[in-house]
Length: 279
Image (cartoon, rainbow, N blue to C red; front, side, top):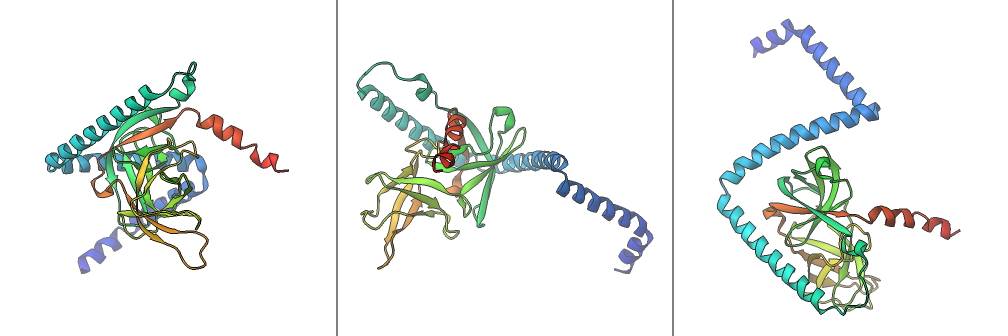
């Protein structure tokens, strides 16, 4: 221990210089937007590369489990594709369908390289970023259902705000009744979330399906979120307290799809005029 103190004392000038350099760098990043953005991009890329290497090592030792997940996801995707084809074929043809509606969403697949589930504000890191056209605010899905929303991006990586994040709110819909509310995690069980603001005159039941409403323009309508697992209503409460078992097990999340809404800019531009209409 004495040698350690002696070493530090002998090189005290160097360590003092190093601490001052780090402090100056911190001040520059905190008080200059451009330098802060450059630092974030560099740090995000570095952390992303480290997470990629770490995930590759884990994948090597869990190839069998990954293959099972991929097989299940492919089966589910084929099932959904078949259901969509039947739905489209059953539609009556009434003139030409607007091509913009058909092409409203584009999709980009990505691999999960980091994922937390044990905090109040959980995030997911994926191996796609600006280079693939991914931007903050885009929805993220898995084969099982809704996952979250893109928070930050760098050139080759993105950070996603998970549904297991107490700060994220998503518009959810009771499929059976058509009533919508707000999906928000309570920070407790990573297998369940909550659907809030469903009024007391509605009759939600355990087992009811909860899907995305599509109102925000970010998530496509009808994406599975989960099923009602608990229904509670206080004597004087205006709204139900609904627990929703998530369709996706976030502990087994391996691959995701990012949703690029091609009409979101038009929708946002239009809705910006709503406050003016109230005057």
